[in-house]
Amino acid sequence: MNRLTTTELAVHEWGSGSPVLLVHGSLATAPEEWPAQLPLADEGYHLIAPDRRGYGDSSAAVGEDYLVDADDLVPLLEETHGDGGVHLVGHSYGGLSAMVVAARHPDSVRSLALLEPPAFVATRNQPAAKALEDRIRFMWDDDDPDSEWLLRFLEVIGTDRDDLPPGLVDQILDMVPVMRNGRPDWDDELPIAELAAAPFPILVASGGHSGGFEAMSDELATQLGASRVVAEGAGHEIQLTGEPINQLLADFWRSAR
Image (cartoon, rainbow, N blue to C red; front, top):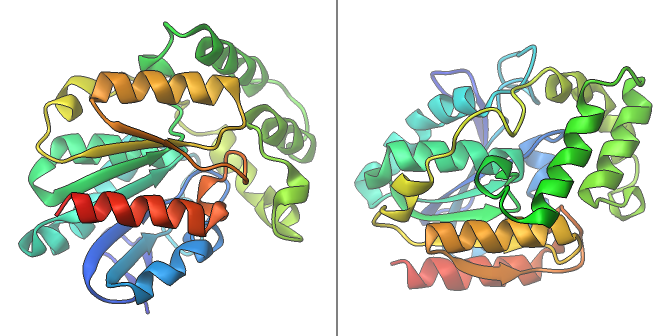
């Protein structure tokens, strides 16, 4: 089932049961990012996956902004408040908006799972994480054509284009300007202290493919007092591992009841 929220987000939904809000990363739409999670809809979970502003069928945007995204997610959180809150999952850039909205509305969140969020601002004390940030920042303002820039970016974050579904690189090329014109990952403070004090459990997952992301995830989990897991096999696109990450998420959600 698809619908629009009051903020004109296109929302894709599968299954019924405990609500799970899935927030996709950059260069993606919800149907492209979360297909491997559909088996969870048959296990008692109501999957709610919006296209973030600027992507898919949601409202247009010159550039993505995780602070705006956090505001956009509020109506979806409010819908689940009476059900005891939502299991919130954020991948990559979507993890930043998930962190912000969870800190602002802790009573609407049952658990928070973060899949390699680029939390550079909070993890610069780790050399490998700082080196990854420097590589991304170095390429951010260059004038390469979008097609060349995209391939370089995927290489930097540890996504092998050969591991992506056929034709996906061509499909996401039109999304590159939304990312390149967006709020950079390193621009604003993240609500680390608020999340560390929040009443819900937190999980930080990485893909076991990048020293920078591993160091970042380790440090972020330490600061948040979070559980820490690794799901290997799909690089930065952890959700595409399917069963491995689904099992880790389902175990985490059961423990959060």
